[in-house]
Amino acid sequence: MEKDDRSIDLLIENSVALQHVLTDVASSLNQLTKEIRQLVDLFKEAGKTIGEEKASHAIGEEDKRVVVEKLDTLMDQNRTIARGLVLLESSMKEKDRVKDYHF
Image 1 (cartoon, rainbow, N blue to C red):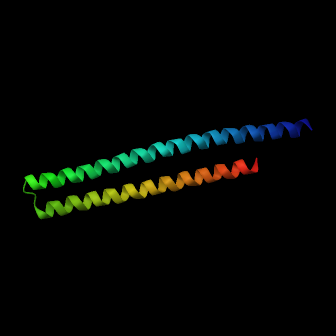
Image 2: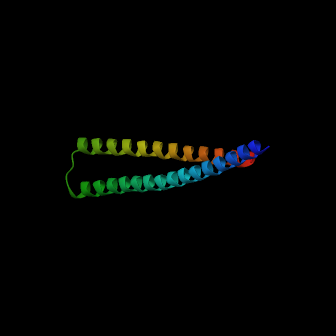
Image 3: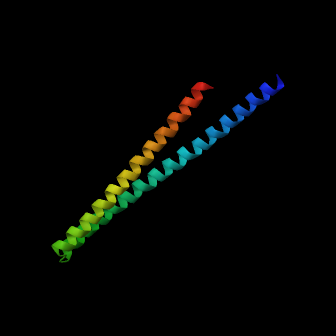
């Protein structure tokens, strides 16, 4: 009987420790998502600045096209990363909810 009680105690301790780790991961993912959003905003602002500079300087059409394509690519990559992080966070929260349900 003592062995069973000790096993149950260990399972509970491990579950609590895992929940703490999952909470830390979710928190880190939230922070990373915020920072990626800030990075996207930075790229948007850089794009605006480039557009304003174009108005004051003669930038060739080919240069403009290349810069816009690169900024679009970066924006798409950042959106993909952000979506992946949000999905990962949702998955972690769902796993946490399932674990709470079983205990």
